[in-house]
Amino acid sequence: MDDLSGRTAASPPPPPLTLPLPHDNLLLEILLRLPPEPIYLLRASLVSKHWRRLVHDARFLRRFRAFHGAPPVLGFLNNQPGPPLFVPTSDAFAAVPSSMMSHDSWWALDCRHGRALLQHRNSGNLLVWHLMSGEQRCLPRPPPALDGYDCGPGFNAAVLRAAGNEDRLDCRSCPFLVAVALTHGGHADLTSACVYSSKTGVWGDVISVATLEEVEARPTTLVGNTLYWPMTAGCILEFDVDKYSLDTSEVPNDMFCYYEGLIVLMPAEHGGLGFAAVDGLSLHLFSRVATTDGTLVWTLCRAIDLNKFLTPDVVVSCKTFSMEAIGVAEGADVVFIYACKCAYMLHLKSMQFDEVSVKGTYASIFPYTSFYTPVLPCLLSSRNDKV
View 1 (cartoon, rainbow, N blue to C red):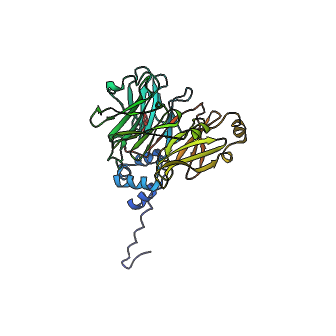
View 2: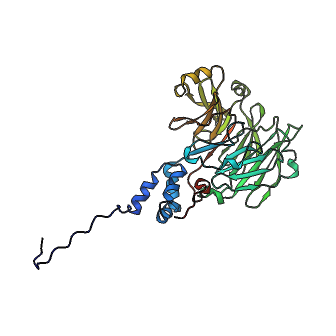
View 3: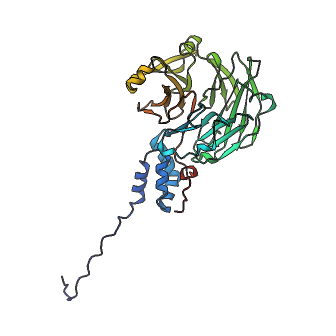
């Protein structure tokens, strides 16, 4: 239609070929609600430089972790032949370069705060492996007072981040500690411990405590600032990292024998030390609580019927081959259970029950949990990031 001047009105501009990206605030709310597995934020960071800046912003990453709560379980380290050393539990993390490590050379000791602790089967040397970045760090040998740690039983070790770094978003650059414990050969009445600091690059003083049993090579748990190492016959070695002190406690012998020693230490659901064990087709969760007079006692907190999660053939097989709790993902509230050459994950809060796709004979395993971090070369694999 012509206007009053007689000129033809201009045609409206054509619609854009693509819709504009949402406002940053809206986009951040969308990104916040992506699944917690690292691959999803990784994909978002590859959309553009602008998206990457949003995803890598420290405030957003803290919000993302607070929104999702517990970090996702991405896999676990396994020492049994057959399955690989690192077994992924999420397809979103299948690209972890587990081929870097093999059962022929390495033995898994622990996994925590984004790092795995391995021991070389021949030399006994200790190595810390950051699973997300693939970085490795060989440690100097422990002090002479711990000689013999690489020659047989009675040894265990744990890795954890250094105090004061709980809010660090990039565990790769976070200082870490490695604590080792050794029951001296031929002297089950003495157990020693020592801590290596990545910040100083040296081992600390060796401390010792009188013990009746020896340290076992089974999963360690961290509750607060105290490491708990399992020992034979239900004894527990307690190492307060802050106070740099050792103590011992125990699971009552009748309770320990009832579960045939197949218990896994873990943080209790409501704080303090706990353990998980399987009785028939029931998962039992215990907590160590203080009575009115200060005595510590073990109390059954939950009994979870596993029968409803299992297929009929597995239930029948479990009557001959018992189930076993083999690991706990600290902070993620996930218990791993082994039955009939399969590993299962039970999420204690949601009661979701998942079967690990990689079948095999599993014993003690060491779960790996992690949120997205800004540096993910192992997920990028051979892909060139030129966005």
